[in-house]
Image 1 (cartoon, one colour):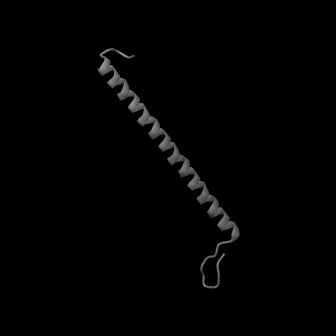
Image 2 (cartoon, helix red, strand yellow):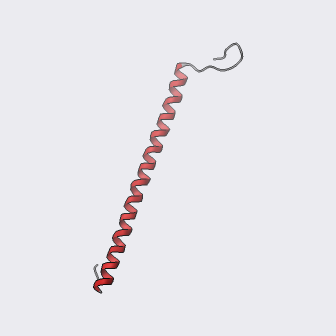
Image 3 (tube, rainbow, N blue to C red):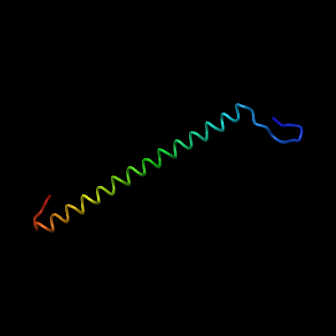
Length: 65
């Protein structure tokens, strides 16, 4: 829809479509970042456990696994 100056104006449907698309992108990005954060914590916990096992094995001088 164009006005008298030749510029464009958005209808209510256009605005709703833009807002919905933006909301979908924000939600998708949030869950992607959340997943990355969870996997980061899991990875760090795994590294800590492995280092703990190695340290315990070094102190005791025996095989743990």
